[in-house]
Length: 353
Image: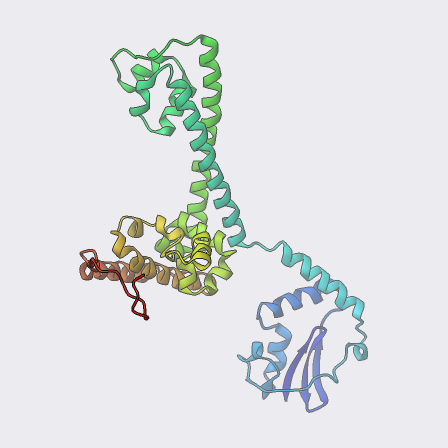
């Protein structure tokens, strides 16, 4: 007995003879639901019921019930059981619409990291403009606080005397005086910049939370922000999970790679993963090897996140740390460069170039 499933029902066949069957309800909702479950690799209740008497099955999805065998089931036609192509068309359209609106964590993370990077640029631009403008009035403040604190102080009150008390500055400022109207205009800009900083912090927290939930291994190995950028650059979690290590290592360095292919310049050793502390803090002669190690762990982490729910973060991070320590011990000094001789190289013909 061979178990066969069509879009309209499940059948138990003995060669070209149907011995038993379970037809699906003749409505769009039921057909679309079962088609979706089949697409996701699930086994239907009707299949489990008939599968108890099956000696083999006709598709790999049902391999948990019995052994898989090749079987021509073209003789089982929907018209014989009162099902038409219009029902199949409507069910397929419904399933397609549902697939379009399915939640894709990688897509949401990609949009979040793009918004986050845009806000970083906006915050830096507004902060720079504010420092140049307010610096005419209070130049000493710039070296006392960071960008965000600088913005928040002016947004609260642009008075030089009040800000001096706030940061504990007693020396007299060398800045020029400003009218109250100018100070209030600067304050309006500072309030807008402060809102941008708050939005950036909120999105950053959201990215970290979502990455630890949807990509726990990638988040642990690469960090939530770099991991989100890798997902965005690769085009989603599925594509990142399928990428080879060498491609992951160079994500974000496409322009440098094209330049290398075009004019023969030195090839890049790393892309966006250069932002990882283990890479950018390493000596230049160790960066390529460390970047390759990091890319390898990122590849495994992405696969673990996408294809399973296993938390392998501790093992992946432990191996990466161990390997990086080996690289540091093995290559403590920069490579010796070949000594240049004073003689010019000769061509094969013996003539000097």
